[in-house]
Length: 202
Image (cartoon, rainbow, N blue to C red; front, side, top):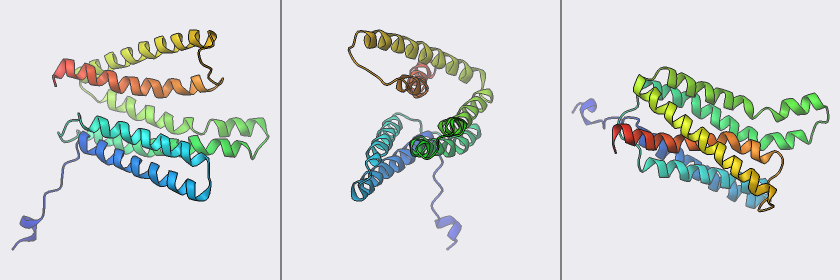
């Protein structure tokens, strides 16, 4: 019997499959990091593990509503550019603080502090290239999602600033700024889902 006829067809890479694989990897990595940190007595491992578990949970939750249709070539190119950059960011965002403790020269400390920004530049580049190569409908949906996310994050930061002055809660001096870009990315993803459903249906 011909082996080509008996071989199982390769499953097409869809948005649902990508999110499931990514979420499973992140959850597994987060669990492994927390276990290894507990065995080695590394306190920083809890933060890394919780971050990975949260990200994996979000991806798995999004996979429940994602499409099973095969990805367009521009989406596959985006994933090839996005995932290495975001992995590099996750490594650097937890590695730069220990590195700062090893140097005292201000210029070198500034260079080390900016290390996590470099992979995000490639993430933004991948997003811009994907948007540039999209059709007019996709560009319109992306524009609406970006507008909604920007306004929402702006209003949220505005409200948090007033709550901070009232002493309701306190954030560090650098933490609010570090949360702006992640909040925009998450807000854009949620807004895009709402906008896409409005244009294309469930």
